[in-house]
Image (cartoon, rainbow, N blue to C red):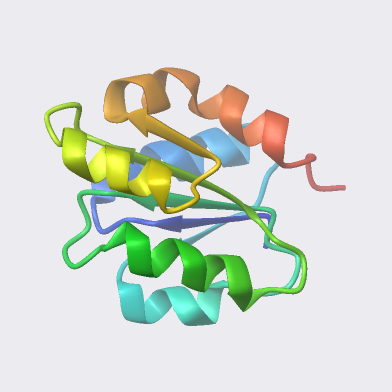
Length: 120
């Protein structure tokens, strides 16, 4: 897997998976925290975290992602601009990038292509 997306929002997952497919990047979707463990496999280059997911605690989740794989993946979190404390927690927890939903979706192709080399 090149990209793992943690989100239960089907509109978001569809947009992100579609953008990834368009540029030739494989995207695996974890619809729950429990499903994330099986999706984090060697070769994962990027983990996208939707901060609107129920029970997502960045200070717990990000370090877990960082240590789950031998090669450390980039971690990008996104969430509503009105959830400033959650966005800040994601940043202080070690995410490589934290964006509001609007910023993220306006730059999703750039984020995917700059972080993950297209699949051969």
